[in-house]
Length: 152
Image (cartoon, rainbow, N blue to C red):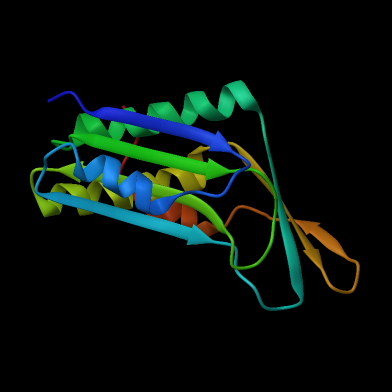
């Protein structure tokens, strides 16, 4: 089965409804998705994401392709934003369409776990007191990605 891969890195907001409708139109029996939003709290006022344009898209495309290789998917969507985002704004959409729900759900979980750890984004948090800090990799994110084994 050859899946329709849609991989985008953008500054604009993500139109989740339009993206899911596109996957539904592929004719499968299931569409699963994960939408990540910038967390608030702790005085956080903004999150800035930087990336290397060519490298980031290539790695995201590799991750999407790996999902399509592992599961019988009709379509895969991986959209990640960059730039300055505020708490509550959408940051990422990972979605998959398949004839069966289990494959769509598992592929979506794989996508977000691998995007979180494998796509080269650098995140900097800004706080109301004027301070800022780079976000470090988290061991639990690495553990989530590791449960899927190595990429092919």
